[in-house]
Image (cartoon, rainbow, N blue to C red; front, side, top):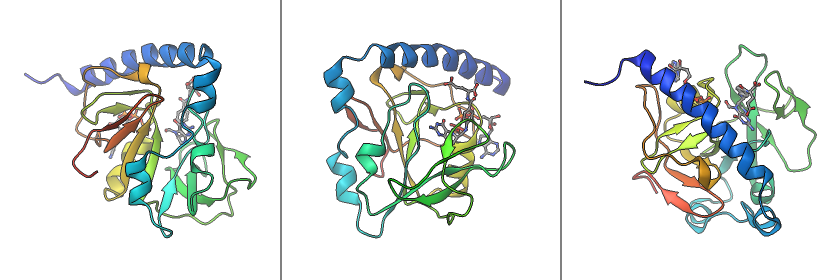
Length: 194
Ligand SMILES: Nc1nc2c(c(=O)[nH]1)N(C=O)[C@@H](CNc1ccc(C(=O)N[C@@H](CCC(=O)O)C(=O)O)cc1)CN2
Ligand SMILES: Nc1ncnc2c1ncn2[C@@H]1O[C@H](COP(=O)(O)OP(=O)(O)OP(=O)(O)O)[C@@H](O)[C@H]1O
């Protein structure tokens, strides 16, 4: 019998705590070479998908999340998550490397409120945890899951450290599977769209 929804939410919360700890510990103890080389180049299968018109959704790292700005800075068109307030849904707004960033309501830096909103063709999504079948968890706000549900055509590429992998993520009906996961070690294709 499948687990009741509240059990899954509880399992996810326990995993989130464990994996946030793992992520923090791993990132704090990275050797210099890994720190300098991780997440510097776009995986070839992603580069091959992009054309000069592609809009890519990145993020500004918080805490122990991998910093992907260097890897995405040269792309033709970028957008970043933006929240008008704590309660407003997440949107993406255009941003170019070097443009100013502002403190957002959820503790993440975001583009100016005047920046144009846009729908990326491909999203690099920060992970708290992932598995090899496309399962993921994030911070628990459901922001990415709701955005993915509203924009199912956008490709979903998770970004995380290798230690954030689990065998099988507990899943809820609203979870949207990842197409691939990029870690400091591997590019793992998890869906049929790549
Ligand atoms: N870099 C980054 N940008 C992002 C997200 C993210 O996870 N990472 N988001 C993903 O949805 C959205 C912002 N939503 C957020 C929702 C909850 C928390 C949150 O609970 N933060 C904890 C600290 C977590 C930690 O220590 O790692 C807190 O404030 O207590 C943060 C952001 C959009 N931008
Ligand atoms: N499409 C959706 N419609 C309504 N509620 C949703 C949707 N997606 C997720 N939620 C709700 O959001 C809450 C958090 O979801 P979940 O635990 O999957 O977060 P998460 O994946 O860690 O967060 P995020 O997607 O921001 O990275 C849950 O209560 C979930 O039911």
